[in-house]
Image 1 (cartoon, rainbow, N blue to C red):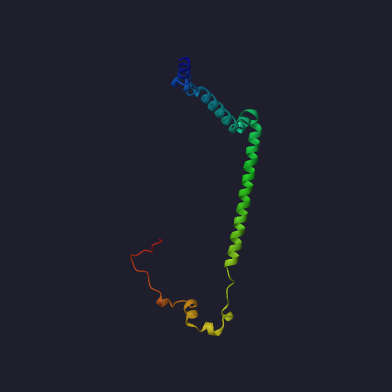
Image 2 (spheres, one colour):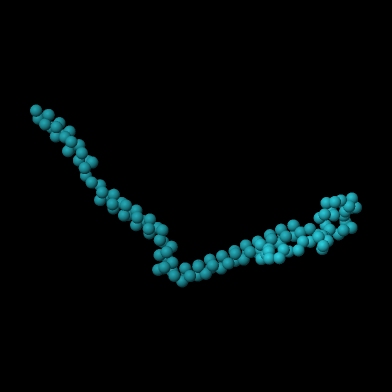
Length: 135
């Protein structure tokens, strides 16, 4: 009978659950706080250095960064202006003179319709009391 009592004691639910019933919340809380402290400290190194250890050096670095930014912006503006000028030169064509156009083209109806200006009597007058939409 003592073997049965030993088995009952050894296999009792309270005895089996003792490993799980101990709370590890304190250990988990300590680990979480330690991880937070490490992460916050690691991400704050530059702030701590610039604020408390070397504020003059931080100001010099800020001025140097601002100067480099201004130089980069000026270079970008120069590049943009150069690209605009190159695009303007590429899209403008030299004016063609009338004697450069062959006779068969000059006598065509399309050439005449696109190059000749309208007769002043054909230009309609602006109706009174109506304004143009862009005025």
